[in-house]
Image 1: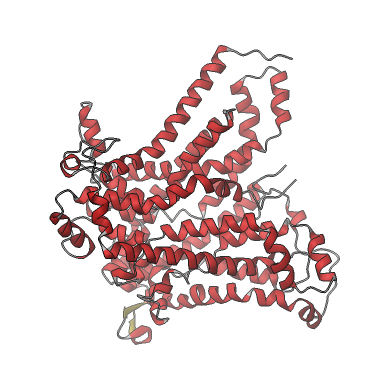
Image 2: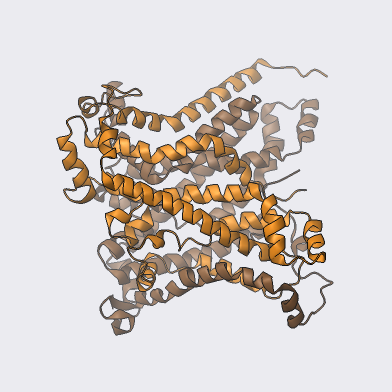
Length: 297
Length: 321
């Protein structure tokens, strides 16, 4: 049977494709502009003549950045933080998800535990009580305040729980019958076949902890222990004659080609590059990862 | 057929199955003790980082001084609560928070749905993936990065105003005008999130039975009729569910974004609960007042979340746990 194509259908189709293209471009445009600015020379930036392409192409902004020891330190802190966070969060999530996903096993108190977990995750004291608590734990100005408090990631745990629930029961039962312990089942059977969901969780954690910048602002005092994004935030604050921005601006005056705006652009580009480069390849994990644990009907 | 959200009725998910014998706990322990041990790391983390800090809530009721400690500080009861709504900007804070939050939620979902509907109409897979990759990218960059870009682009003498000037329009004080700034906040947040937000709707769209569309085509339904009678009803459970769930987050109006982009000039319309806690509680070291606002936010927020979960169960048949 042939369906007739009305001319308005084609028109609407064209409009849709156009709008989608425009939307896609709008999403990428600001970054393009920043990249262009970061490669541009002083006068061009100051006179706002930089559009989508570098004017007076120069590498001075990046060269300047790479000479700041603080830049490398904060970059390293971020990397270390991501690696440790991924490891710890995966560990805790997987260990926690296994018992909570075994609905068919009689486990008194599981519901109570679930409720407790949900309750205390949702109801916390806020920023100030956290500050006081961490202070008493010795976590202030301590690198571990960037890694430990987020140890239990509920979102990841729920993803893994749903995934585990979807695994065939026979795998587990036959192993248990053969004398395996629950730990064996988890480590030797479940984890190896859970790679998709684990990869997704690892990615979510990595992106989340790379981007997280506020806790360092509150809980860390020394610049050398700040992660990259927090350093970037402090560098964005206007009108400061001391601290990071002062350091950047004063030293920038000595560099004939580098302006604060272009410097900030370069810093932004460098902070965004890891994600922007990796993203196209891992994007499908984010998109499909959300549906990994869905119910199959 | 997979659906992102399981909308099974209550009875199927009931925890108390009919045939569970009452096994003495000792036996349960011998067989399944590992299951309990496995929960230890998560529970320990919860205990240390979520339960333990709760003692700090008491600070909202005393005139806290770090040197005197909690018990050494003078008890003032509800002084800070009343102070918040009379002298300090409590009412403004709540107003700003809720206005900004509601705008973001409504506009955000609207754009996400429309975008998903459009994307769904695309038949060229590679174009679909291309658009999806680009539009979900802003979601994964922090507000420091994006805010840094916007501080530059929307500055009074920034790129945007430069562009506006070159076509003959006047400069717009995006970042400094209290009336325009919230619009910028809401719009930029929608820009950042619509790509990712559309993913859930796309999943729901692909879950609609294709036979319905075929039958409609046979019956001569055009594109708009399809939309009205099949597509929209097909995703309305999802829309309702997301609306219910978003209620719980209404007091979070996007702290990261606002902190980065805010300046004292726009405080009157864009100071939200969290920025207030940071500014007054931490920067001005008024711990008690900060703790007061934080406590209010926690309590009301918690009630809203509980309400949203109940609503989701009642209207969208979705049990969160």
